[in-house]
Length: 133
Image 1 (cartoon, helix red, strand yellow):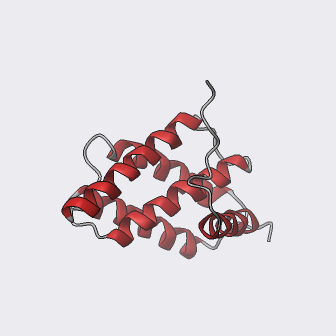
Image 2: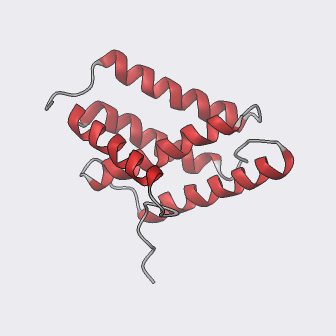
């Protein structure tokens, strides 16, 4: 498990998230697209915490805020999209995630996905640590 994911798996995962982000940016999103982008955000965070990345914590909090806004807008208006302000936050996370998929061993990715499932099954509103005061 010290090996990276196979190249085909990396491409498939990357393509899935890139397609979701573009779909949501263009205003054609559905609730599931936002779920996928939330998964991207948190898996990227878990992998960074494991040593694969160095984005500021604020970048993740910003993306989380845009995700909450997109979810509220979707629930109220039925429009599931990230606006032009929110898109760059996720584009940055996606760039890091692509790097993580290429660099992290498969066991680290599986561990991050397991951590995502524990978060989903738990009661916490966010797996991100609070921003320092």
